Amino acid sequence: MTPAPGSVDDDLWSAIGDPTRRRILDLLLADGGGTATSLSQRLPVTRQAVAKHLDVLDRAGLVRSAPVGRERRCQVDAAQLARAADQLAAVGRMWDARLQRIKGIAEAIQTARHDEGTPDDPQHG
Image (cartoon, rainbow, N blue to C red; front, side):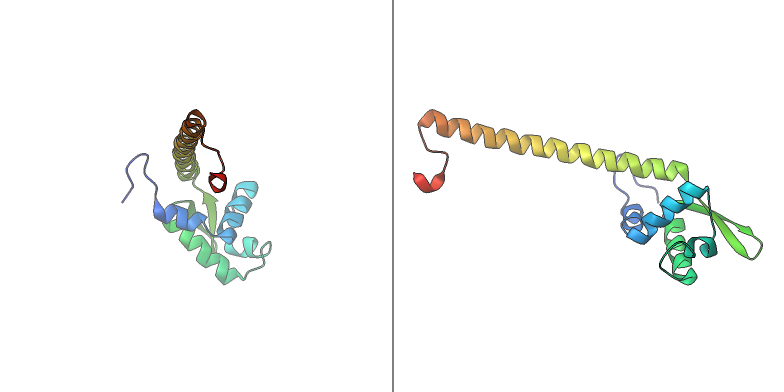
C-alpha cells in the first residue's frame, strides 16, 4: 500500500534508518549497481548480511534487482529515492514551522515580561 502524498512511509524510513543500508545505497548509486558479493567486499559485513539488507531495501522499493548469472544485480530505484528525499524535505519544513511557532511564543512571553517590568530570569523575581 502506497502512503498518501505528503505522508511519511514508515517502511521506507525504517529501511533507510540503518547505517549499513544507507552505505549500500551510497555504493549502489556511486557504482550504478552491484551484487551482494561485490557490495560485501566493500563493507564490514558478510555477503549473507548484505543480501538481507538488500531484501529490506527491495521491500521498501529503494532497490530493484534482476538476475545476472547466479546472482542478482541491484540498482537504486531513482523514483523511490526521490520520494524519500521529498518526504524528508516535507518533515524538515514541518519542523521549521513548529520551531518558528515556538520562537514566536517565546518572544511574545519575553515581550510581555519586559512590558510588565518582570525580570527575564524567573529566579530573580
